[in-house]
Length: 122
Image 1: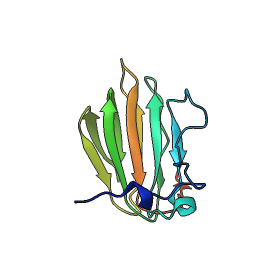
Image 2: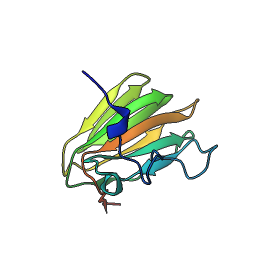
Image 3: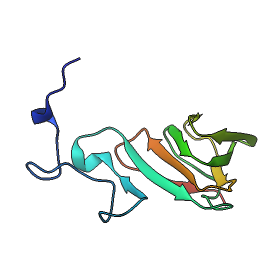
C-alpha cells in the first residue's frame, strides 16, 4: 500500500496534529472532526486505582493496552487486560476501567467517532 505524506492533513499547512498539550506530555487526546478523521482517541496513563467511572458512548470504543494492567467492566462483565491486549466495547455498552498496578496503566482509547460524546452513568 502506497502512503503519500503530501496527503496527510494537519491542523495547519505543513504541521501535523498532536494529541499532546505540551511537548513533554504523556497523556492527551485527539478529536478527529478538526482533522478530517472519523476517529478520536485518548492517550491514557493511570496510577494504581485510577480510571474513569462507568459511562457509555453512542459508538464503539477500542482500548489498546500499552503498559501495566487494568480491570475493565463492560455491561457488568469484569475482565483483566495487560500489555498487548485489546478490549473492544460495543456502542451503548456501560463501561469503565481502573489501573491494577503496580505499574501505571498505559493505553490508547480509540473512539469510533470524529467527536467524543460521553454519558456518565455514575
